[in-house]
Length: 630
Ligand code: COA
Ligand code: AMP
Image (cartoon, rainbow, N blue to C red; front, side):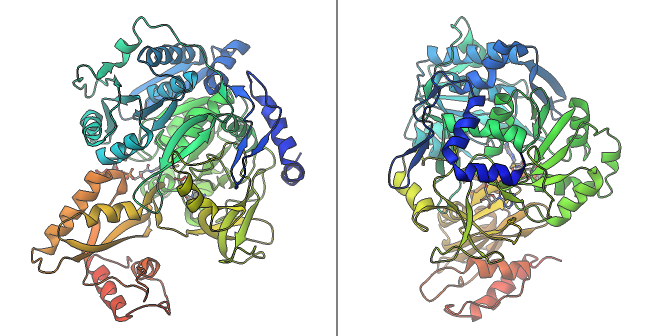
C-alpha cells in the first residue's frame, strides 16, 4: 500500500488504524480502545492497556531467539574504543541496573535524572528506568549546572544517574562538579546518585549520597519488567520554550511504543536486524527516539557514536562508521553535514569508503538548506530525506515515507504529513489557508499516539503554549505553507526559539541570564543566520545609566554568564552595547527586524515602530561585530 492510500486509511478511521499498528507491540494487556477523549482538548491513547517499554525494546527479542543479535554498537573515535552488546547482554545489564535502582528505593512513577555522555551505559540507564516504570529525564551534557538544577527542581528525582565526565574534542567535561553544583543550587535533593566512573576522569563520591555504578549493582536481584498503564509517562524531556523555564515534555508509554515501531519500517525503511544510526545525543529527542528506543523496539542494531562530524579525527568519520558497521539508514542534523562539507567540499573522504550498505540519509532538527541537501545527494549518490518534527511529537510530523513509498524529493521541503497528522496552515484568525499561502503551521487535534499529552506539572502552560491560540489545533510554533502537491514547507519559528547547530534554544533564557548582569539595564537576544550552525545568538545590551566601564569587558562578562548559566551549547559568543532597543509603540522589541538587519536582508520597518532612527543605530552596532556577513 502506497503513501496516499495509507494516509487516507488512517484519516478514514484513525482509531482502527492505530489499533492495527498496535498489534506489533507485545502487551501485558492489549488495548481494547485506541483513543480516550479526556475533554477540553486533552487526549490519551491506549490508556486501558498494560505494557512495558523495556520488555518490547530488549527482552522480547531475546525470547524470540534473537539474543545473539547485536543491539548496541559503541564507536567512540574520541577514546578510540569500540564495542558491541548483544540483546542478551543488554538484557542482563539493564536488569542488573534496574535491580540496583530498586535496591535504592526507586519505584514505579519515581523520577530519575540521567546526566550521561554518549556511552552505552546511558541507554542502559534509560532502559533500566523503563523496566521498573520509573520516569527518566535525561539532561544534555552541554548544559550548565543551573539548567540541571532547574530540571531537578521541576521533576524532583528520587535518584540521579550520572557519569564522571563527558569528552569533547580536546576537553574533558567534568560532570561531577556540575552535578554537585546543581544539587547544591536545587531546592529538591535526590536521595541517591549512581555514578558511572570513566577512566578519563574518575571523580570523588560524596559519602551517604553517591554510590558507584558497579557497587550499586553488586549482589542485587536483577529486576523483571513491570507492566505499566498505557498512559504512564515513559519519560520527561525538557525543551526550550519562549521563557527561560524549560518545558517538561511528557512521553506516554503505549503510544510511544506503537508510533516509534511504525516509523522504523515506514519512514527509515529498515528491517529487524539491520543497523540504524542516528548521530545525535541521548540528551535530545532524536537521541531518545532514534538512538535508544525505536531501533531497539523494532529489533535493529543501534549505534552509540561518541564523536563529532569533523575533527574526530577527520571529515570521513561518518563514512567510516557507515562502512565499518554496515549502516543501512543514517540520520543526522543538517549542521553536521554542513560541517563535513566545509572540510571536504569535494567529498574526497566519501570516496575512501564503501557505502553500499547505506540506503538513505535522513536530516532533521533544523531547516535543511538546499545547498546541503544537494551536496549530500550528489556526493553520496543516495536519497537524502529531510523530515520535520519536534521534541513534543517525538517522531516525524512531515517526512518522506521511504519504506512505504519513496515520494519524489522536493529539495527544501520535508515532504508530506505522516499518517496521524492533519497538518494545516492557519492565518492569524485561525482560518485554514489555501495552498501556497504562508501561515502558522498547526495540527488538528487529536495528535497521534506517542505525542505529548501534556507538560510535566504544568497543565496551564501546556494549554497556553499549544492549545489556546487556535482552538481545536495544536500550535507547532513553526510557520510555513503547503503547496499544490501537498508538500509542506517549513519557513521560520513564530516564537523566540532559535536553532543553533540543530539544538533548540530559548533566546528568553539567554536574555534572563544577561539581565542578571548588574550593568545591564535591558537586553535582547536574536538568532542571526550562520553558514555552519544555521543560527547563532547575538545579544544587544543597554547598559545601566552611569556605567562607564569598558564595553568590551562587560560584553565578555555577559558571554561568560550565558556559558555558566545555560552552558557551552548555547554558543553565545557575540554581544554589542546599544543605547536603545527598537520597539513597537506598545513596547514589543522588534527582534525579527533586528535579525533582518544582521542578515543583510531588505526589510520594511513595521508601521508600529516607535522610532525608526534606532534601526540605524542597530545597523551600526552590528557592523562593529561584522554583520551582515559577506
Ligand atoms: N557536553 C559538553 N559540552 C558540549 C557538549 C556536550 N555533550 N556538546 C557540545 N558541547 C560544547 C562544545 O564543546 C562547544 O564548546 P566550546 O564553546 O568550548 O567550543 C559548544 O558546546 C558548542 O558545541 P557545538 O554546537 O557542538 O559546536 P562545535 O563548534 O563544537 O561543533 C558541529 C559544530 C556542527 C560539528 C556540531 O554542532 C555538531 O555536531 N552538530 C550536530 C548536532 C546534532 O546532532 N544535533 C542533534 C539534533 S538532531
Ligand atoms: P526540537 O524540539 O529540538 O526537535 O526542535 C524542533 C524545531 O526544530 C521545530 O519546531 C522546527 O523549528 C525545527 N525543525 C526540526 N526539524 C526541522 C526540519 N526538518 N525543517 C525545518 N525546521 C525543523
